[in-house]
Image (cartoon, rainbow, N blue to C red; front, top):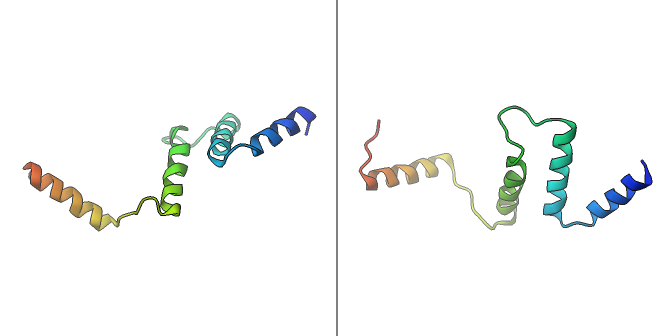
Length: 82
């Protein structure tokens, strides 16, 4: 590794984790494009949401809880099941 690359790596490693993640994502996309169907902008968002779940900042719901909640919203708005 060149000295410039080493210096850059050290600077990146000194960044807070969210910034490091974005740098990694940007570099990874430049080396190997993401799979089709997943826009590169989703990487940081998915990591942010996963971190919120891991920290307990937000609580997940089961598929059934989600379905019941959405159905309640539809029922309240008068939308009929199709």
